[in-house]
Amino acid sequence: MTFRFHVPNEKVPVVGSRAFLKVGDQFLVLFNVDTQLYAIDDRCPHQGASLYTGRLDGKLIQCCAHGLRFDLESGYMLNSTQFKVNSYPVEVVEDDVFIIMNSAGEQHDEC
Ligand code: FES
Image (tube, rainbow, N blue to C red; front, side, top):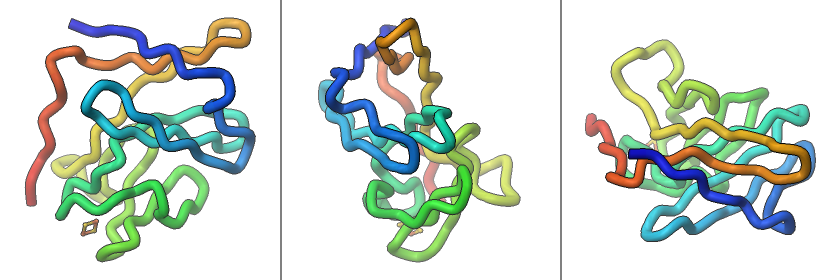
């Protein structure tokens, strides 16, 4: 079952920035890359480091801990279709931003 999390307007990042969000017991990062919004878990699927402070290159986020890179859109690690960070669809309705989430919680792949 899914639900829509309404991102408070003051938390919507401007172009080129990111915002840290707490949704229930989950921590997310919302990125604005060239006006496109992407939402992912703030937890690297490798060993759990925060991705909020990762280095952004286009829509690839590089984890600061060990350097793995993930596509913000699909969540998949670069050159992999097996290993991914949870990513969430983002809807923009006029001036409101919503993140579509699974209320049952998402599973994290382990490596
Ligand atoms: S914890 Fe992110 S690459 Fe290891």
